[in-house]
Length: 334
Image 1 (cartoon, one colour):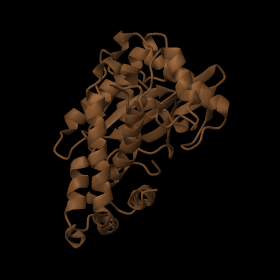
Image 2 (spheres, one colour):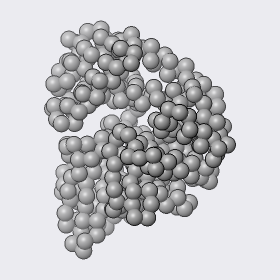
Image 3 (cartoon, one colour):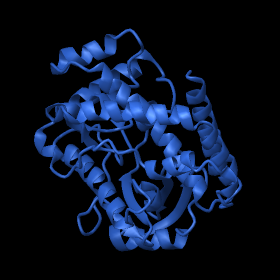
Image 4 (cartoon, one colour):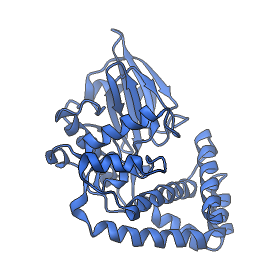
């Protein structure tokens, strides 16, 4: 995220670090990296450093009526799975440090989930294309290790039920038919409502296709493995001791296609190498399922964002540009 969250001051953050992790911070610096969570670099007077992440639990809900407690529980399960993977010997997993009560994160100011990570020195990457074929091959190797990890590492993970987060709000937005009645929660409320209503038909067609594919996925539970969820370049780091996979807040038990749909360069070679290593043949309908889900989830999350109060921040502007480009692409069928 590009801007710090409302409701979580530096003072409150410092107090939580000291209380739950016994970290006496001498400096707390906001880092505008990634999109979805808030990040800070923290140091103490002795020079030790940590990387701290806060997630707004309102954004982690799957439906508007879901409680923040449920959203927190889902986040805790994902980070607990990462901790179990790390404990099993998968050193590439950057898991959160346990709080004083042993939990992988804590609840702060009711609306935030706070996690503390070891500071990892190395090269970071951005969302988009992999930096080289070697980078892509390395990530595939990490995913093969993840998907073949001992089944005990799944014990605290939740299972993907194919729910699109904030789908309920997206369907209200596309079916309202009256953008002028959408209210004015912020500068993008009515533009977003107009955009979604104007593209109701193609979005509905994509949702219907998604539902058909999700039914196929649910009929094959035996194929499920523990997945990361977002193994794109921005969630990788190259360190002096090897590659690392970060940001495990989306970890779920799911079909392997959840991690692989975006990796294939188009010639099938990467998917074939995965099959040779694991004995699992990847299924085209499930690759399509998660490809579609990525776009629908982005659209639904932004539809929810602009139905809530917002001020037109840099994060709002970035979300609006993403929403517009995605909806226009779906609308033209490209």
